[in-house]
Structures are given as structure tokens and as C-alpha cells.
Image 1 (cartoon, rainbow, N blue to C red):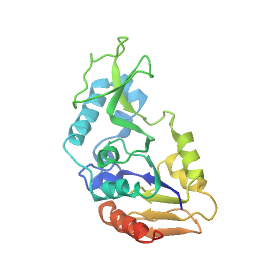
Image 2 (image 1 turned 90 degrees about the vertical axis):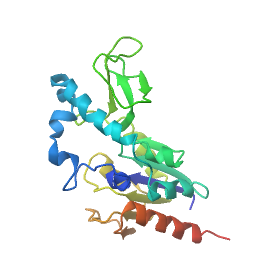
Image 3 (image 1 turned 135 degrees about the horizontal axis):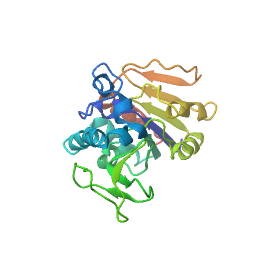
Image 4 (image 1 turned 135 degrees about the vertical axis):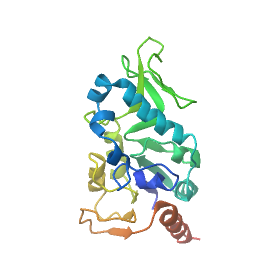
Length: 231
């Protein structure tokens, strides 16, 4: 085994204190995504959208990677680990992971509404109306909203196609196109799903389910992999 591809969802970061979207107390229980995470919402009420993402960004500056993030970073000492994440936080990077592909954008980045190639990393939590790019265009969250294309999905598919092991952590496998990635794993390649509520709608023949949280299940599985390395 050489390349491990890791697909992570909201459950990966939940134990760091970051709210998920789809759980019983998730963000979509108290907010309508149509009001906060669509291009139409931005056009209709940009201040409301900024307020929502500012609060999430503020929280991100206050939390830290959990044991699951740290275990994945440790795995890079022995394997080629490629992380494909649906999360918009930077906890994988802060834990030390080197190869992280963000499918849905990055909360600590903003981009120009007039020139999407102008992307900036924020060192503070608040983005305001009137904050502009070098060309004078208003800045918006660097997030893939509902109804927008997912630019990195092609790269993610390419990674999964080359996987010797696909590790899926903390995702309901209900958000497309990310949920379709498991279908691109090569025939016979083992797929390990770590999630306490795992009930995948897949009949993958080489699927192993570990019904534990990321902070518990991932370190245990990583230790198992490392223990089984050839001497």
C-alpha cells in the first residue's frame, strides 16, 4: 500500500468544537441555507451572509485540531496521504497535513466578486462590506455555495482513482458531488468508513465500517495501520 486517500466531512472537525450542518443541532436547523449559502442570498442580503461566515470564522480562530487530525498528519510519515475535505476549516493543515484539497472552499480565505482569481488569506475573522480586492471589487467568502460549481471535484476524482486505500471520515455521504467519490475507488481497493452514525448507501464489497467518532476512531485505525507495516 502506497497512497491513502482520505475523504473528510463535518464529523472530522466536530470534536474540535465546530458545528456540523446536518446533525440535530446543526447549523441548518437554525438557518436556511437559501438565506446564507447561495449566490442569490449574497445578492439579496450580503450583510447577512457576511455576518454568518464572520461568526464561523471567529470560532475557527478559537478552536484547535483534535486527535483525529493529528493522527492523519502522523500517517504521512509512512504513507503518501492525500486528504480531500468537504470542510472549510484549516484544521488539517494546522495539525500538520501537507496535502489537503478543499472541495467546498476555505473559511479563512476571501476572493474578489469581480475577479475570482484574486484570493486572499485572512489573518483576522471579520470581513466587511467595503473590503475590496486590489482591483476594487467587493470581497466575498471563498466558499462554494449551493448552486455553484465545485472546481476541485475533478482533481478529487483523480486522486481517488489512484488510491490503495480510501478512508472516509465523519461524512454522511449525502452531499453531492462529494458523496459520489467513493464510486471512483479502484475495484478491490479497501474502503474504511469511520463515523458513529455510519449507514452508507453503498454496496462496496470491500467496505469496513468503524462506528466511532473521528477523535477516537481515526487514531486507533492509524495505529493499526502503522503496527502492520513491514519491519
